[in-house]
Length: 371
Image (cartoon, rainbow, N blue to C red; front, side, top):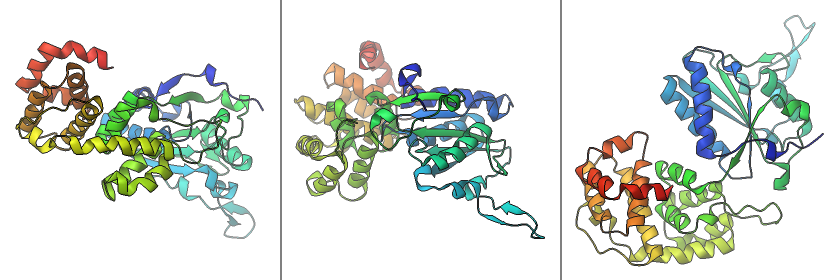
C-alpha cells in the first residue's frame, strides 16, 4: 500500500474547509439532488487541529442554510471492532439463515426534514479489519446487509502517517474514490471560532500575543502534552468551569499543553491583574488604557469575549467602540474585526451604531492589515 501524498491535496484552514463543504452540501440539498451526488470526504490533519469541531460547525451551517435538522453520529473507530460496524449475527425466525442485527450507528432517521452526518473519526488509526468495514461505508454507504439512509453525509478523518501517530497507509485505489482535504491550523480561523464559542479570554489573549503556540505538535518528538486547538479548548474549559486562577490550575494546564507552554501562559496571565475593569469600559467610564503590548492584547481579547456575551446590549457595545478610539490604531482595528466575528451578520448590526460607522470612516482602512 502506498501513502497518500499530502502535497497532492488542498491544504485549508478549518474555517475555509467548513465554508467549501457547507457550500457544496447545501447546494446539493437545496437543489433537491441526492447527497451521494458528492463523494465522501476524507479530512487529514495532525492531532488536535480541530477536525471534530469542524464537523460540528458544518452541521450548524447546514441547519441554518437548508432549514433541515442536522444530526451528527460521531464514531471513534479506534474503539471499534468489525462486529461493531456489521452487527451481531443471529438466526432468522425459522432458524435456517443467519441475519445481522443492525448496529446503533445505522439507527438514523431517514425523514427528509433531517440531514444525518456520519463522522468516522480516527479511520487511519483503526485496525485494518475495522478499516475495511469503514471504507465500505465511506465508499458504498453500506456494510454487510445494512445501508445508510439517503439523507446521510459521510465524512471520515484521520492523522497523516507523517504525524507519527498510530496511522495505517491508505490504498491508492481507495484514496482515488474520496475527496481529500488536509486541515491545517491557522490562528485567525481559530480565533473567529473561539470568540463565538466563549473560549476563555485569557486563552485568546495569550494566543493573540503568542500565535505560534496555538499548534505545537511535532511528530518528531515524544512529548505527551503539547499545545493544539483541542488542548487549548480543554484549558479554557478548566478556566471557565473550575477556576480561572491560572496559578491554581497550573498543574492541569501543564498536563494539557506541556510545562514550557504552561509556564509562559502563567507568566503572561499576570498582566491580567493590571487590566482596567471591562465592566467600566462597556459602561462608558473610559478607564486608563494600558501601555504594554501584552496588556493590550489581553485587553482587546477580554473586550471581544465580553462583547460576544453581551452582543444585544448595543449601547454598551457603542461605549466600548468609543473606548477603542483611545487604543493604538492597530489594536483598535483588531478589536473591531473581532467584533465582526461575533456572529454571522453582526457587522450589519454594528453599522447601525453611529460610533462604529464613524470608526469605519476614519480607521476602516486598517482592517486590511489585520487579516
